[in-house]
Length: 351
Ligand code: SF4
Image 1: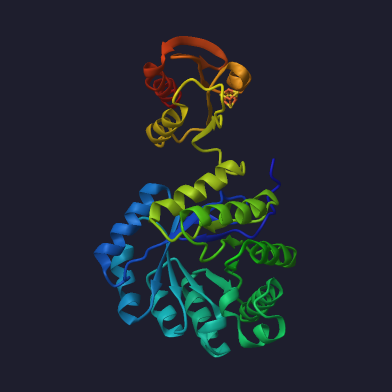
Image 2: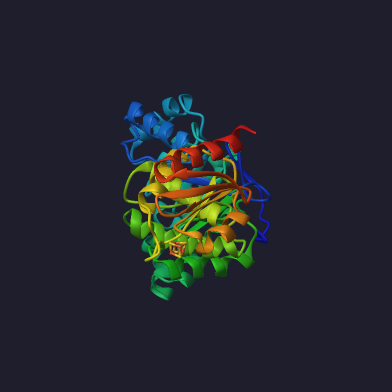
């Protein structure tokens, strides 16, 4: 059981972040934001995949104004991601639900103050998005690209916003490696109660990003740290959400979908378990209710696993048993097992 550290609750559109609200998943489009149709198309894909909050890069005035039309066509809360140019943040604030700035590269204090004023007047939260790769010079000179430098930057910017009377804040502290990312979030957590957006940035392709994010975000989640998160993947949009949801599920945070227990196989196996599990995973991806299901290659551990499983298969030679809640309900030929297994799982989702 995870004891989640209680943070201040803020709202990104109608999605609550922090407090006792569920940990939300985020992603980012990779279209030119001014290409409204393509951007809306990507946002709809993300929405379908289960994303809770979406972010678009705003690199010029055309992008900033395109957010109006994008916002009118989507249901997800929309975040504008701004670097370097505070004026874009001010324009974007008219159309979106949250502004993400990296104070290290937005310019003078006065410019940040203008962004704060625009957000204040519209009751929009600001994400202070600190990145190890773009710290302010003073912190870079003093600490280098370290967790300490990231925390110092975050504290400085939090105080600056607070001094302007603004506390509608969430914070991210991203580095491209796990130890710095985890250290930074751990160091900052006891110092305030703002919600944290978790992420390991520039984490690489599906394989590496999954490993890095599982270790980094998983560690933090198990310590009760984190209110919203993005898994950054060089790959397809849906992968970010699938991995994020899997991390939440396997950390025990999100009781959602199937927990598929399958054995690694060994010399006792007498069936094509690898293909069977791949097919089961594909055919049950739509199941959103929390269920434990197990697929075991022989009887050695199958009965024990079946006792903890809602639905189970124990393979034998050319045949296998289907069990529901530990009771054998069928003894079938190998080529009939997957169909029956999936149909038993689907019965649960109809209940
Ligand atoms: S369940 Fe059977 S086949 Fe699978 S790894 Fe264990 S002993 Fe091997």
